[in-house]
Image 1 (tube, rainbow, N blue to C red):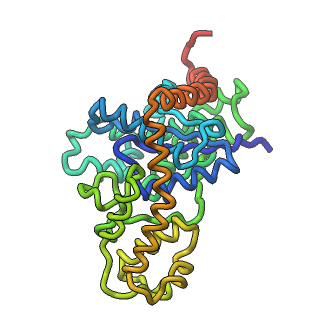
Image 2 (tube, rainbow, N blue to C red):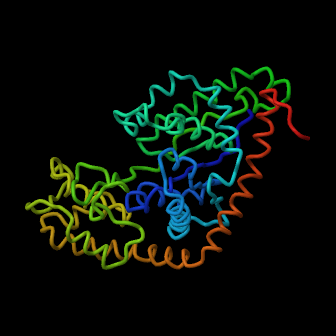
Image 3 (tube, rainbow, N blue to C red):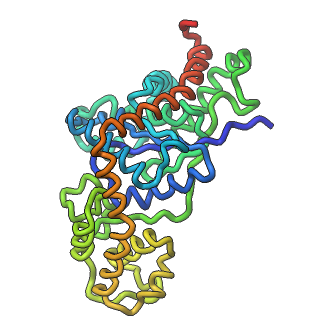
Length: 349
């Protein structure tokens, strides 16, 4: 039976400095996936401009996110690392998908409602059509697997719907030109990739809120650019409660700050929360925080140091992105040419 080539696609927006949540929730999994899959990792700068970005800051952020990928262990020789805007086929396929996707589908996207807020009439068309571009990002490489968080699952479902509708709408042309993969059609149905229980990292100031790049308080997160002293200070100041650590996970119920710090320790040390509590249960937070400081500094400060080293050589960073874009386009261009033929466009040679 014909099958699609197994390929992973994922990306992050260069809208602010990446933090511990990005590292534990995504980057550590990206690094591990290199062992088992062909991986394409994108800096999605076209998505970033769905809301206003200062051009100078955007340039800096694209390079910083690239440095974070590499410093965390994504190998630009084994995986493809590039910024989205360097491969024009992303925009081309997004327009085709804008014409395939239905208005009702986009109207159901909850993330647009959250980001646009009450002033939806003032939101950009790009913010509204963002999910169609995300579908193009994935399907331009016929990616079969996409590591996604809870907030992106709905967008991946839309990508699957767009792929299916394209395959159905143009089924005759796909078959006539021999461009399908058996009965599967031209585009695959990308699957969400679950790498096990990735820790949900919450704010260091409020355990009920997700750690976020947009939080006004820098003390709410550990940035991947933070040095050892800053990491230590933020953990020492992290909100806790007066009770000792429980010996079992059930004892974390109703204690969001305690659960968050235990989860961070578990994520950084490759353990379960139960294993962490077996070691530290019954002890006070002062001792646990000291151990967490040591672990976090050991794991994260080398990443910050490597990022500083990489960012000191802008030409090297730009070279990684340029080479990655060439490799990405070598995959994307033939697929986009096929799409144009299927749709009925007349193109050069």
